[in-house]
Image (cartoon, rainbow, N blue to C red):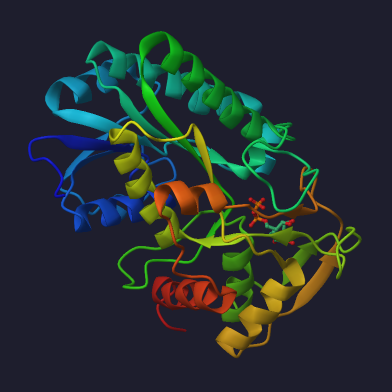
Length: 332
Ligand code: UDP
């Protein structure tokens, strides 16, 4: 079934890491897309659709204008602040951007009768897991303001669904990683806080070493375990979730991960293999707020959405991240 013409999908945060990859996936399926981003962390050149609006979700006027000007049928909402550590230090930015921003978006949608939204949520809603892998109905005890903003918005969406008939899906990402294998767009955060790009920067020599945050966790090698999911697989899941939502058969939330966990030490080892370079490691203390292990149970997304991650091996994920990084830093 080809997407209906004359109906657009609004992608907020369309200049960001996961948003830009999702726009690429939507365009390849023939969807018409308008991107919105305040460019606080995103990159204008990553927006591959023609229609782009530079605006902030805290600017209600600008938001309402977007809904008046474009024939928007559905929203995929990525725009948010995403760093756990920063949210602990400065929660105000998180509550305004992630909570107030989303409330503004929902009220602009309601004014125009737009009733479909796919929401970027996170494994951070779970907090310290009681069981691994983590199913969607696992208790939710977020450990950071970031995680709390995501959980709050899931609850708001559930209330809006009941009261106003809005249709929504929350996608709980585990650790997004890798880059577009065609090398058109990729992961680019400034400053970088994520493990794989940091390790690859150490391989490239743009940083001297990688610090392991904690080697005394109750895991086989003492370092944290994470479930790395390729950004292209995440993008694909958004398209599938939107289609399921349109059929009126979507569940409120889906975990998006591979179901396999890798330790921080393992990630560094794989980065050494893929790059063939030296990577200096320094062992440091734990980073506050990090759960020892986060691994998804992705069964529901696989069964209900028909989602099948393509990049199941960590080596493949790291290889696409490395190709992109060589390009980003101009082949050193
Ligand atoms: N990590 C690390 N050194 C770094 C960055 C991250 O040891 O320089 C660890 C971090 O403590 C966590 C894992 O790598 O256990 C993944 O961290 P990241 O920030 O990439 O993602 P998060 O799990 O916080 O979403």
